[in-house]
Length: 526
Image 1 (spheres, rainbow, N blue to C red):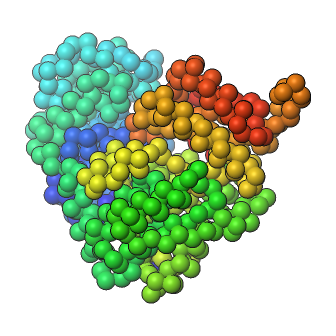
Image 2 (cartoon, helix red, strand yellow):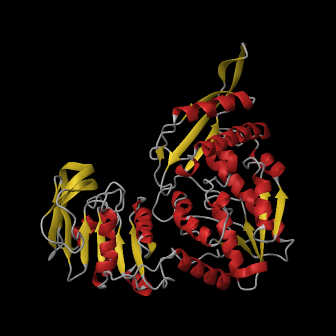
Image 3 (tube, helix red, strand yellow):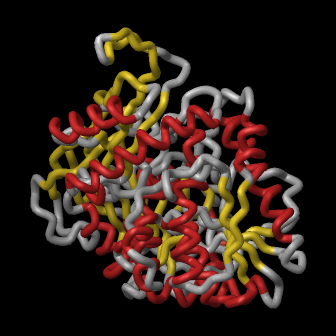
């Protein structure tokens, strides 16, 4: 079954943007962060697997190539490498951490096990002038994470910087267009790292900052219109920012060929169905069909406890509902989904390990009868919000916190039942209300409640013994969901949330606060 999607992450073919940077993924999540930083500099980035060939890169005509960091050592047997022909293309290459070590190893330098690994914040020592490092001060803070050390740079390259644990923390060969840094310029812990990346983009690769919200919209509309043609399209509309932006974007491309399908799974937030249907029918005048499939979802989830199985069950049920609905609209051929790039990454895209299967990526059935259109598949959340704002989405949708596709099902640890969902729905509504009142809602990436129905705790309520469920409050700050820190919410806010939940939601007698960051945890509990 052919999947209809924008050809952004393919490993062959000409990229759709005239000036692009290819990021070669060596298996960690660094590649996605690097790509995001490049996009923030308004330059189009495309992630390719390390198996990409020199011929495939030539076909894409990139302005530059960045080799990402990775979790392995260049000395390990079978360590990730690249087609050596890439080095002979004359395209500027920047190696970061593992990528820098790979350049050194392959191009006449030397890499060895470091006597002492270097991890975390460290000081960069400038050795000589550098096009890449520009006017970075001697002693600038950078973020390191390496156990191997570059002893000698690639043949012909000059050492531009060192650090206490890296004799070669930066090197460059302007004639060959080879550059490397041992530190991670893409992370926020390297304060001037974005400047380093932008010097590579603008000074070395001569890119222009032309990747903007306006250009993304124009490009997406053109691609969707070309892909869909005159065929019918249905959109999986949840009401979250992702599916909402996808729906409006596709409507701009194909107009009345689009029918949005809102499925009430029974796993939604309080008042969500009414809000979504009202906004899209009255404000955007998009044809919308509301399907109440809650009974079917609860029946399918009966007895299911494993988190991965829940996601797969919900993903398949979504598709089946859409397939049935499509038959009522002249056999619509395409299904629009608001899949984002972090969804793809965590579901095991390319060399990255599977963290969890997202219902609209890893949970899709193989015999799906609809081709996919995923116009946001390779965008990050900040890019999606920017184009949503340009498309005129209302604030209450545009700045709504991310909500998992499987809904409240993955915020209930254990079996999902109507009774448990209703308890969680009421608690979650209180969390939202209090965060908005306190003015912290938009400061958070997500803030929500998790129900633990497999545990009951003893309490005292109204001078009587209670034996009810605990609920966990989870609130995190993040830039892109790749990493997240637990939010230091004010104590008085936590107290109000706890008091209201226990006083207003029958079945809960204890509120806990999750203070774990990602990693090691994920943002969602399941």
